[in-house]
Image 1: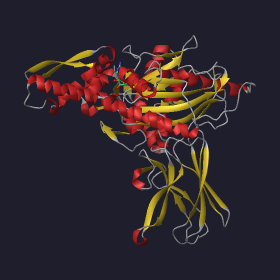
Image 2 (image 1 turned 180 degrees about the vertical axis):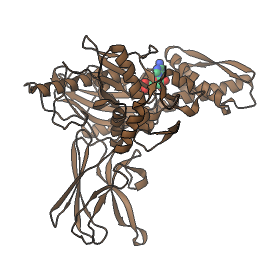
Image 3 (image 1 turned 60 degrees about the horizontal axis):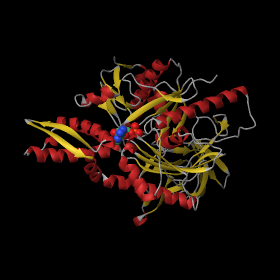
Image 4 (image 1 turned 45 degrees about the vertical axis):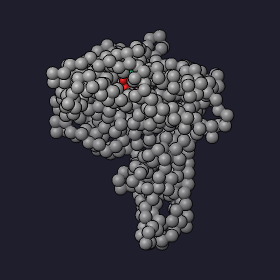
Length: 542
Ligand code: AMP
């Protein structure tokens, strides 16, 4: 019998956890508040106690300095936050959220397992994926898989591998938009394109509604002072507009009672007004879909879409379906919006567990193909993943371009560093690329390679437009035979199906081959161990 695996959707604004129930179906586990989704907000009550979820979100108004939200936006960055004299990295804070989810899931189900599959947005780069895996490790969990949210959504929508089809997943969550195009066939799931905007999501709709309500309030109450300058008023209104926004998904109008000083007004907003105030945001999401479709067309000319899945809490807004229908003429498949991803992770988790079982049993069933799939927690490629008794391949694309920092002669003959891209966004994984280079200095005995990942939407040679994903000091090859300036060096980069990068350099004259596996994590081993201790020493406050 497989070890049960929890599937976790670690969201920017909300998270959810699911498992496979006794009937073999994925089921989202309710939190102690009785809700299926939990706000991804952490309140640090003391140096050993935390609160995650609704209570933390509500408390954010009063305890601003002890509360963290939207931490997912900082995953893989060196952000440091301090609470009660302890330094927390984004991985550690996400670790606290994961610990809380798993704690209540274990209590609710009685399942005694630490095995989890965690989802990440498709556009997450290598560093953020690794940061997410580390967050799991910090929470004391055994991360058996990291999969992308659209693939999880497709799994939960019951994609069948016996019918070939092309699928587009439009996922508008609380903080991000993700658009993924994939092909599903008997061979498995092949991601063709992934695109999105990591700073566009439900929170932007909240802000637009906030501005609209504040404007109306100012006019209705004839205020001379601006209420939004008052932090308490602003925080309260920001919470209330989210509820109001959700009401507008169901009803044609909604109202908010605004109080400022002696002024009290009931401010009414119609759905039409809200839609007019957010038309530009919807337009941006539709443009991204069109951009993704154009890239997919280049890869597979004449590609059509058999199904378009709507995912993410913000896709509940009727304006989303209307805009996609109007622009592309699609009929859309609604999923369970904010639950689909966690359920898909649980399905994948079961597949991973089934694989582990079959591998342990030494089974090589004839209907089982060898697969290379994106992330089975550090397992090598070429393993088998069973879903619903069938083998499934999930092949991914590189979400951001990867390059090496080279040096060339710049203005006045001064050395000018620049990024030379070796692997480009949207290329299928696994991949291997080579780049001919030359030594820039004289008498080179050591060569340090700095690997960078594209940060903006387009590739840029400017070093600061990219982010280093090797440790600060780079990956160094030692023992070169005092190479003169201009000696050729062949640098090659291999990224496996799980996103693990291996750099090699060959010095052709001596034939000397150097190989290094790049560490892509932002947190180094010692910091990781320290963070694990911190989270292990903390408990939910009752
Ligand atoms: P997710 O990250 O997929 O859980 O989505 C969270 C986002 O969905 C938040 O911005 C919520 O405010 C938003 N959301 C959830 N339910 C609704 C709804 N009924 N109407 C509009 N937005 C919603």
